[in-house]
Image (cartoon, rainbow, N blue to C red):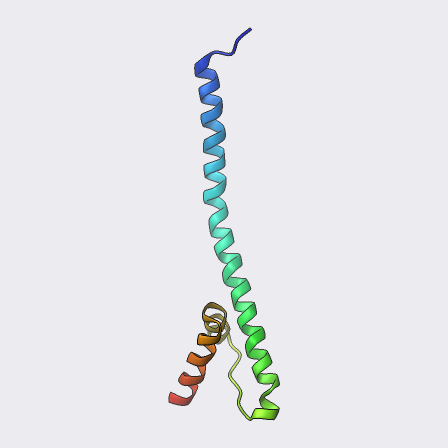
Length: 88
């Protein structure tokens, strides 16, 4: 017995809609994960700088703002935090 075309079309359309909805719901989760991972990387970079402060005499504060700035921007973020520390 052959499958009617409208039923096959609705089946394919349903699978496509489920895939699209899944992707839409997954994107905010990836964004939150990426922000958290970048913030953790920035915190580790700042922690490394602060561990070396005994040798250099230079340290940066470790707080959520500085960790996210260093995480998002990387080395330029560390330079920005350094400049802000000296200016403020």
